[in-house]
Amino acid sequence: MAEETDDALAPRRRFQLIRRLARHRSFRIGFIIVAALTLAAIFAPLISKFDPFEMRARIRFRPPQAAYWFGTDNFGRDVFTRCLYGARLSLTIGLGTALLSGAIGAAAGIASAQFRRIDAVMMRLMDGLMAFPAIILAIGLAAAMGPQIGSLIIALSVAYIPRTARIVRASALVVRELEFVDAARVAGASSLRIIWRHLLPNCMGPLLVQLTFVFAYAILAEAALSFLGIGPPPPAPSWGNIIAEGRDQAVDSWWIMFFPGLAISLATLGMNLLGDGLRDVLDPRLKVET
Amino acid sequence: MTAPVVAVQNLVKDFATAPGRVLRAVNGVTFEIAPGETLGLVGESGSGKSTTGRMLAGLIPATTGTVTLFGQTITGPHGPAHLAAVRHRMQFVFQDPNGSLNPRMRVRDAIAEPLDIKGHIARPDRTARIAELLDMVGLPQAAADRYPHEFSGGQRQRIGIARALALQPDFIVADEPVSALDVSMQAQIVNLLLDLQQNLGIAILFIAHDLAVVRSMSHNVAVMYAGALVEIAPRAALYAAPQHPYTRALLDAVPRPDPNRTRPRALAGEVPSMLNRPPGCPFAARCPLAMPQCHDTQPPLREIAPAHQAACHAI
Image (cartoon, rainbow over all chains, first blue to last red; front, side, top):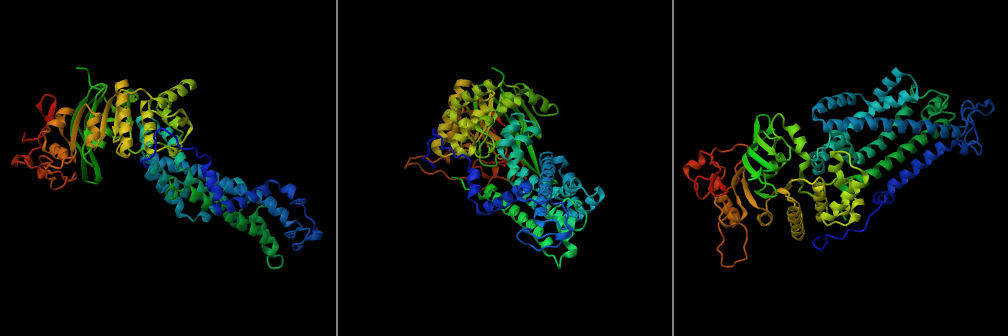
C-alpha cells in the first residue's frame, strides 16, 4: 500500500460486475434456464405449429410421442404447446409481481429509513400484512377482485411487499449513516435527492436478489391459486391452470400435470440459482478489495 | 478585526443514550475562526471534537449554545432558514475516504454534486468546473469518468476535497481528513490543503488527533478534553509554552528522538464517563496540579496571555 503512487490512476476495470457474474456457476445455470424459458415464451408460435386452444376430439389423452412431445389433454390440445404459451402467463405474473412488489416495497422501505417519523407506523403495517401467510392473503384478495391476471399480480404483490420493504429498509438504514450521505446533506441536498441518488442505488443489490426470489414464489403461488380455481381463468393456459385442468385425469394421463409441473420447478430453480449468484456477487461483505 | 467566519458560543450537545440517560458529548465550547485562518482542534477519541465539527456544519442540531456562520445564527428556531442562506459558503471534508464517496456515482457527479444541488448550471460550465477542480487537487482529467473504487485512499480524499471546493467556500470543516491515510499520503494531503488555503483564502476547522499534523496546518490550536475546551492559543505559543496540564501531558507524550531525554510520566487514570460527569474540572482526577477546588467547580476558559486562553484553576 505504501508503494502506491498518488498521481497515477489504476488501470480501468470495466464491466467487472458482469464478468464476475459470468464466472459464477449457479448464476450461469440459472441465467441459462431463465433465458431459455423466456425465449420459449416469446417465440412460442415459432417453436410449435399447434394452436394452444384448438380442440380435437379424436386425439384426446394421447401420451407423449413424436408428434405431441408432452402428449395431449382431455380436449385434444397439445400439452407442449400449452406449456409454451402458459409460460407467457406464468412469467408475466412472476415478473409483474416482482416489479410491482419491488416498486412499492422499495418505496415503503426507503421512506421508512429516510423519514424516521413514519417508520414505526409503516413497519407495524408491514408486520400486520406479514402476519397473514402470503398464500392466504393472495387467495383472499384474488377472490375479492375476481379472476384476472391483473388482480392476481396485485394480490401476490401485496403478499410480498412487506418482506421487500424490510430488506430495503434494513440496507437503507446502513447506507444513510455513511459519510457520502452527510456530504450531500452538508451541500443542502433534499430528501428526495438523497433517496434517489444515494440510498436507492446503494440498496439495489439486496433488492434485486429479493426480487428474483419473489419472481420464483409468484410462479409457485400462481400454480397454487390456479389449482384452487382462482388463478387466471381457462382456456388461456398458465402452468398453474394446465395442472388444474389435468387434475381429474391425474392417474391415467399423468403427462398433463407432469410437464407444466416440471416447467414450474425449472423456472423456480432457475430464478433461485440466479438470485443466489446475484447475492454472492453483490453482497459487499463477500467483496474482495483488490 | 474582521468579522469571524464562524463563532461558537457555549455549544452543548447531549445525546440521549436511553430514556433518562444523557451523554454530554460537548460541554460549553466557545471559539471563533477568522477569515482565511485554520483552527486545529485536537483531542483524543470521544473528546467531542467531531461532534463539534458536525454541529458547525449543521449536520446535527446543538442542544444549547449558538453557532454563527457568516453572521447568521444557524442554531435555534430560525437556524434551518439561516443555514440554508449560508450553506453554499461552507463545506465538509470527511475522515473516511471510503465512506465519503457514493460507490455508485462517477467522480464527475460526486464533485459536481454541490453545484447540482445549488441550482442550474449549464452543461459546459459544469464540465469546465469539474476539470478545474480535478486540476486543483492534482488528479488527472481521466478521473472524472471513473467510480470511487478505482482510486486509492489518498486519491479518494482528493476527490472529497475537490467536492468541498466546488462552490468556492469560505469555510471548510475538515474532520480528521488525514487520519485514515498512511503517512506519506498524509503529507501530500496536508500540503494540498495548505496550498489551497493560501491560494483561496479559505478558513478551516481542522479536526485531528495527531499533534504533528495539526502543527503543520494551523494558525491557532484548540485542545479538547472530555467535551470541554481546555486550552486555545496561537500555534507557536501552544507548542512552545503549553499552559494547561492536559496539554502539557499531551505534548510530552509525543515521542522525541532524544536518547538523553527522561521519559515523562504517562497520565494515570482514565477519561471520566460522559454519562455521569463529575462536577468540577473534567481533568481533575488525573491532574498532577489538582487542588480541592478543582473537584468542585469547573474552571472557565480565561485569558492567561494575549490570545492564549486556558481553563485551569492552577495557572
